[in-house]
Picture 1 (cartoon, rainbow, N blue to C red):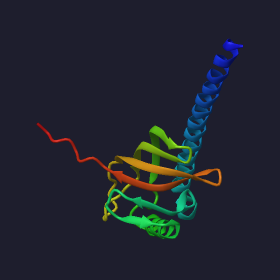
Picture 2: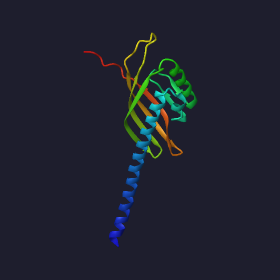
Picture 3: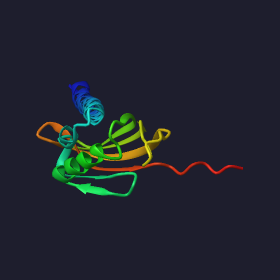
Picture 4: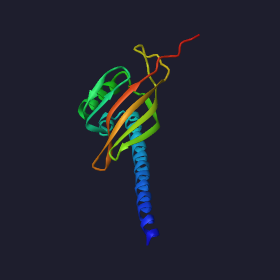
Length: 159
């Protein structure tokens, strides 16, 4: 009887830890799938599809310092960008680390590369490579971007 009383709490702890591991795994998979959706929508020039990945009140601060707040502003801002300076560009995003902070909040660190950039005269520019930090929130069983901030590190100084 005494042995059984010791086994039951241990089994309960094992169940808690396994469910936490499953939560992390499913959050990781779901967020990686969201990243793929973002890439596909961006590369198709579909601002509305990109915006649906964000929470209704989500924000995105771009490498050039502009912040769009909310899905409508994100979509409208991207439409202007897709018609102008980033028209025809391609983006790849590589999630580097996804950390579950709670059952409905996660943080993603990612690297990105944007190719196909051109200057005002139409001359091709090298790809822009940088990093983003994104906060995701789970709502109605789906993960949405609550906030993203991106940056391009300055070039390394030459000796």
